[in-house]
Length: 319
Image (cartoon, rainbow, N blue to C red; front, top):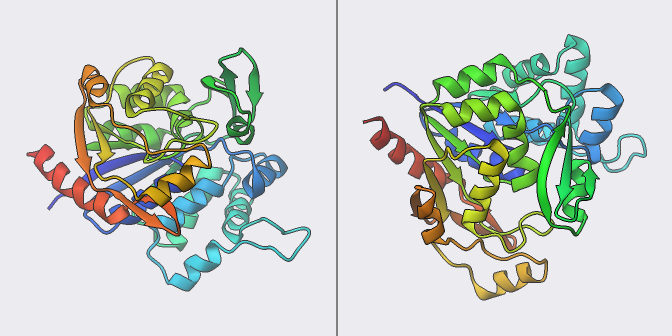
């Protein structure tokens, strides 16, 4: 059977979670990963070596790797008892070292993928350092991805500096050849939309022949999507890309226990409401599935459930 070509676009833990499930199915996977992080270990290495931040890339490589658990554990190891190395993960340092040796960030990722036997390809949304800024509803500008969610202001739009950043040719060819394009899950304004702000990526995704599906977030996020319903997520994506282009939205069908919802309420977060009437106005196919799990009191997407659903869905779609 010919592998189904799936492009997954996003960043953060949401992207890594979904990819951990997909790698066990006959998918030809390409992950296009956001590179706008400017905090923590990634931010320090980004500024010291003038490269895109390696953190989200590292997590995606780990998620798609097929190597000994101990080797993956080492790759994800974070130093803590050192003033100089404190906060850095070994994987971030390895990617940075390879970028310095090869002179190219994307080449470093390719080599690291070979070392860790990665299923598929991992491609940064841009091969250079970019900064994410937000214009808030009150007109103020917040500079830097890490500062946006903590500003306690409502976001009007986000934008990249420089705005004319170019994607890698491999990212464009993967989008053009895809059967399915998955967008999300992840922080809407700081993990998902930044990829689509790379102009050619946004344009190619919008015009691609592939079935384009948004995996909706399970919970709202303080500082980004407070009180957002499912249609608000879609609307924000459309406003930043400049056109409607999604074919379907995957949403969670089950409710969460009251204690879990109460814990999130204390963090100014709640389950994302699926307002079907508004979603239908966008002409979207609404796919409801039990795709959530609870881990250590936190709501997460269930990787295996999403992968099983996508496999069945893609076979029907290909027919």
